[in-house]
Length: 114
Length: 112
Image (cartoon, each protein chain N blue to C red):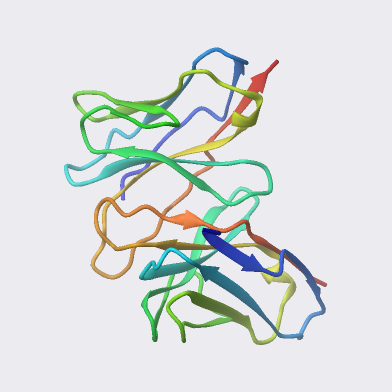
């Protein structure tokens, strides 16, 4: 049981390039989330998904797109990377959206945009 | 969601109990207290949560005051591997989406 995994672990992009971050979970969780973490800012929700084929915007969705074609995978895309998107990206998943929901986080992807 | 306040940093001797306080004076009746921790360069890790009763699991104990305005996370026998940033969060499921709002947290250093 690997839990939540993220690919890649680290990436350097030039401004304007595109890339996709992959998140996979093997816990059969319905809910999946993408966060970014910046120094002094805590975690901020980018997009989330409540089930296969559905996605929704979080706090800071601009410049990102997501897809949830399979229940176990949640993809985060950057269409045209900007230096402001330099951050650590965390994926998380949870079984349900109840009051006692617990989110399980992946190890993070460190992205540097030059 | 209610806000929380935590001390920015704490030290604890290895093998001793680490007691991490959290104030959440504006917590409402349907909000739970959650604790997560983040070891350097890793993703946040769930530790424990509770509503109003004290809770214990294999990692820690959570003591919530009777008025629910504060809580304490207890690591009974701290090890060097417990050095991390600990986040206290209060949250309730929203109708639109759920999010976990992480504040600055408490940086715990376990000292040999």
